[in-house]
Image (cartoon, rainbow, N blue to C red; front, side):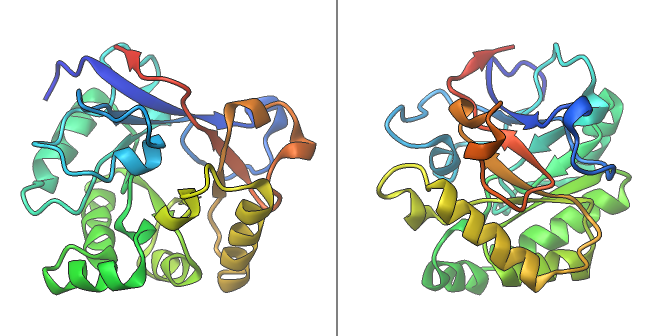
Length: 227
């Protein structure tokens, strides 16, 4: 599984001195970057496209793997959780995430995925296996029912991802992301875990220009990086 040449990093914000929660959440989310990644699509959408096989999402030169989340596309019938869990534990990786998530799709497409057991429930079941194997889980959610199910099934943190349709006119606005986070908080008022959102790189460092309601955030990558 080693030998990934390129990766994407969603970096946690705020950092330690500015933390809004004392509950644990990953300091980075790493995803493997496929070689044919489209430069015209947002990374959160490009990674939903089929790739030939899952690649190691965490670069070899990661200094504190216990504080990072490994992104895996879990709508993959060939993904073997015990193998990946052993590998992540061996490397000291502390978190795993269903990133990107089929919850980003519209309801009709989700229904089709559920018909072949590749829907949101399957993602949560696989995350539960990773959690039982000793890894913390950053569960990606896109609507209130996702958050309710994540809290019911158990998770360690939640990352709110906009639906695919929200990207049609560009990256979703601060107002739209704030409303999405508010809807999710209303659905799980006693979530008991940090709720994270996405930030544009230009929004980091300017709290007044960020979505409200987040405990922390992940700053989107501006480019693919090499390990």
